Image (tube, rainbow, N blue to C red; front, side, top):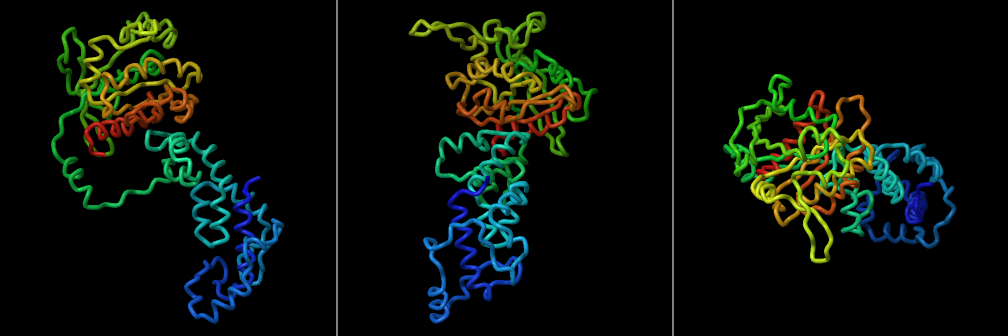
Amino acid sequence: MFGDEKTISEVNALIQKQRHVSNLQEVGYGIFDWSLFKTPSMQQHIDERELSPDSVDEDVESVVDTSDISPLACMPVPVLMKVIALLDAKDVCSLGQTSLLFHSLCGDHLLWKQLLNNDKMKWNEVGHASNPSTYMDLHADMSFKDIYLRCSPDMKKKEKFHLMKIPRLIKSYLPLKAPHVVMFGPGLDSDTSRIVRKIINSEDNDIFKNRGPFPAMFPGSVGTGFTISMNDEGSLHQMRLITMYSGTKKSREISPLERRSERSRLLRKVETESYEMKYEPTDSIKQLCHSVSAFICVVESSQEVETVSGCMEELHTLMDLRWTPHTSPLLILSCTPDHDTPRLPCMTIAEQLQLHKLVRPWKVMNGVVSDLHGISVAIRWLIETALGTV
């Protein structure tokens, strides 16, 4: 049952106080206004009658006087907690602003822990700045409510304009060089591989337009790609898209993740000082990782959890700080072939790939290959982060 000892104690104390000062409270959901107690005589009168928290009856079945407060507040505390537990986070926040009684109830530690555990699996995105696990590890003093409000994409407030944003605003209107973006990942070897064709072929969509190829950045055709323009809700963006496949088409058809690191032509085996065999990118891929601005890792989220985690070694190898700058953002496109295909939650993808270990901006966002739903929004975040216009 919800309601930790601290919440129950606070609520019972408020109930006892409310009985003695109800004549100073608004009828219904009035909020205590302690500024009314300015005269010494009135303050002394209240202090004499007010109960201390230590003397509050510990019986949680205590109810408030029904003479001049809401009928809802007359319910026993355990029943109120069960009712509040049925609300979503936004409704809990709204109810908590109605009175001191509901402010204490709606701030319950166990209530927000349950809301966080349940709702984080429904979020359509999670990133380096909105990962609950990061706040739990680094900020042990933060309450579950604070973590929820900071991480939930549905609870984010619109940022207010201030003067410090003017340089960034001006920069967003200046002509910027299209960033080089590398796309790779197991999703290019499975049922979601059509995403590359749909982005490059302008006839398949109204969002992305192919402006033509650009030459290789390094000898051996390394870094060849296409200049892509993107129209996202009237906002125009450009990127130079480079696609990296782990192997030939024939080798990729064997299994998207079977011995992926071993057969990937992007990686090579190296022997460490302790004679352990590890992987690192080939020399040409190292040069590419150092030169490009951002990365897209496509993951098919309709697969099993174990299958998704099979690409973790390849991902972390490419994102190593020795050859990939920490300023280069990473987008994990969690894709399904169509809208009817069940998917793993973004939070599960982030946990399986251990993205919290990466020292760079990253985000996991949902996308659908059939109509490119959600993909333009995700790529817009990547481009704006790479250019520093977010």
